Image (cartoon, rainbow, N blue to C red; front, side, top):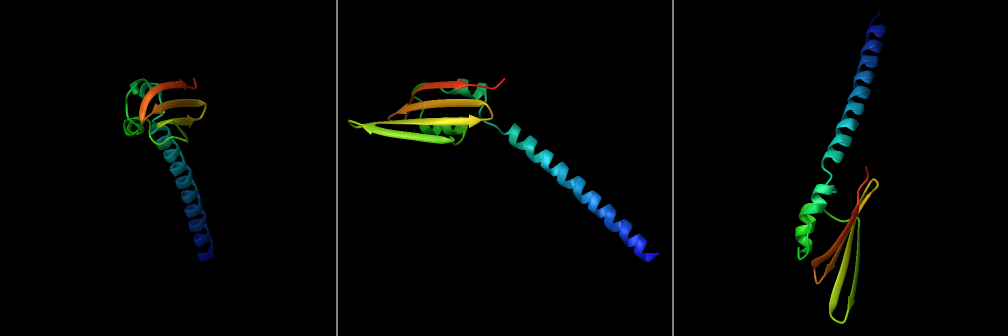
Length: 105
């Protein structure tokens, strides 16, 4: 009798724990989606002569950074990716000179 009661309690706790895990996963997934900085609205905020730090404040850390120097000029390209969206921001001497972006629909 007592062992049946314990088994039911254990089964109830397992089901509750499994449900809590799924709820937590859904909440985390929503949080990551909601926190995305790679949006068309944020892309429009980027303009020429902005600094690298200003761009990072708007778009966050890039997925990829490419740099090169030639004749005293430094060029850097930041690439941002999320799902099927991609944004490229080009800097010369740490100032924006161009941007390009495609966004998933």
